Image 1 (cartoon, helix red, strand yellow):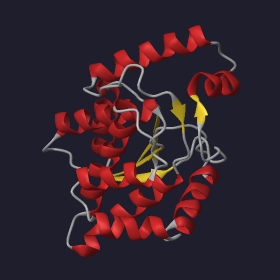
Image 2 (cartoon, rainbow, N blue to C red):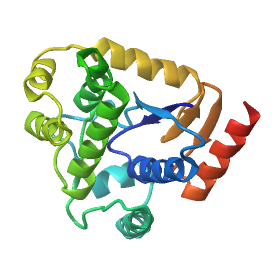
Image 3 (cartoon, one colour):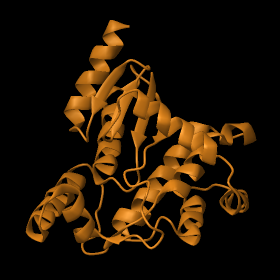
Image 4 (tube, rainbow, N blue to C red):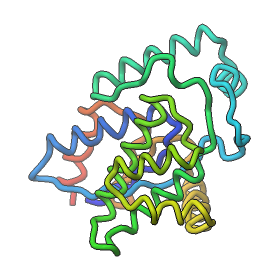
Length: 219
């Protein structure tokens, strides 16, 4: 199977959904195998360079107060824990721009050209970026944070630094985002299987497992 995982590293439900999907894939293996391709989607493409305080941001965007933000944060923390993802309590205080993170993920997807599997490189970097932001509370728009994630993923830091120093892959990321917007994707995660089947949201493991089995049986 080919799976396109459309997401943003600033999306907590994307972290939950990725871990959930991976657990579902482990359950259906070896009967069903898949390659994951991480596609870009910026939740906040116009975010200012210094970012925005998170409660202020969520209140403005969704019309909820600090108490509701706290309740939602705890619910997300519990859902994350259930699938093995740790949301660092009190560590994530701001929302940042993620465009350069998406450029690096696009670059990582091309690593098979250097003798590595691009899907494995992308997945390793995606996990490192999600951990940096949600678990450790780091700024994913900061080059040094991004390069530390590249190192944690076992990828070439010097090559990644060169990408960040220019505008390489910027047009590719914008084109990919435009494509998924044109396909009607307006929220993430959006999990697209074999270019045909859409599963929206950070679903439980069982939901992903059932969908994978049904799609495989219909092929």
